[in-house]
Image 1 (cartoon, rainbow over the protein chains, first blue to last red):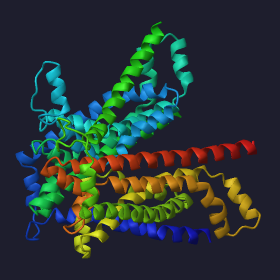
Image 2: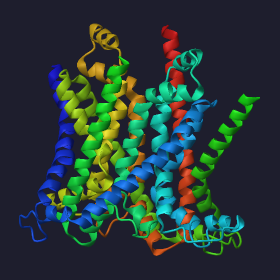
Image 3: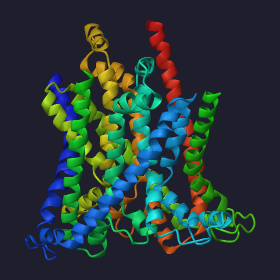
Image 4: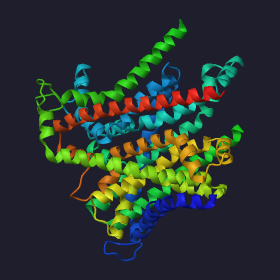
Length: 271
Length: 271
């Protein structure tokens, strides 16, 4: 009886997995072997391993790495300080709230702020530095990306810090560790899982951003995501687009496997 | 003395983080009242852009579409997700359970462009015309896993004793499900529905791929408007969306805290 009810519950869910998880991945792999005319070919893969695409992959990685790193640098202290405030859940809600404002609207706001006559340049004028081109630079792209992803980095770190048993910190202090040692040897290792999931949540989307590169970086930065969009919707070369997507999927699996293994090891160590 | 200084540094740091988080949003709102028509040089106060927005039937239809898609997709995703969570919860075999969960999480960690591109392939192969149906299906598809992740912990928290008690007292399977399990996991279901709603409202990349030419959601429309340049109608729209978001957050916060209070009271009574 129980087995039958279970099957009943799983029918719609398995249908979803088959249609929207497995089938799309298979389709991407299948299309990556087709040229524009629908003939079987390995040309797409050869093209991907050409210097142009390899360089693009590397730049894409580099930008995603920078974005993740800056997110982490800003997010960790923020999460740490937030756990020590009164009403921390309310403050956390306020951190999350901007992530519910449509992404495009926030990107659009930065077109205004970083524009030639925008607030950032007005500020630079006041400081005596003088206005300069901010929009369509690497700086603006990374800044806006960090801005957009920061709540997603703060949240897991905050949760990890919040769950941290305070007695460990007291113990470390009692045993004579300095604040810095306590942080490096006790707090940070114990919240590493939060950091890992934060990095995972930021790095993968950062690798495949495409509307920010168009709106904020003015097509100067081409990420793997931009390339997929370009091939699919502009060039109509679905084969090449699928090939790049295949590599994005492979990268994704590697990152997830890495961070999951870390999480499991962490759990084992804790037990 | 030293402690006081540290607190001050903390407050300043958090103040700057919050300032930067909210600045773009208030920047948009501020200039939505600018009669000058630009996102700099505030001329004088006007409601012209709001009037223009409300006179723009095309935009109003798009807003309506976006809301309908969000509500429908969240509802369907919640149903499928709850079924899936219950099915996974009932699984006895640890390995198959882990496999299903991994499949579940693929769409959560997949880059948006890959989801969008693969769904575009899927809908094209299946012969589904790009438009309302394809966008709705895509939104249901990418919201299902988050519902599962919100509901599953609630199921795992259920004490087996309560279910045993209900069965001992003669409740049927259906009775246990509707009278015991469902009420106890309602907070998780609500949270899942709410997350699905925000996923749908916030999505740009996936929709951009599967929307076709006749149908548009807010994100896609904002993107194409922003690419054409600054239009204060977008600012007016973002003000309205921000107010709605705040109302939703306050509403959600009250529901959640009320539920927690209720639960706390019940647990307290049991003790």
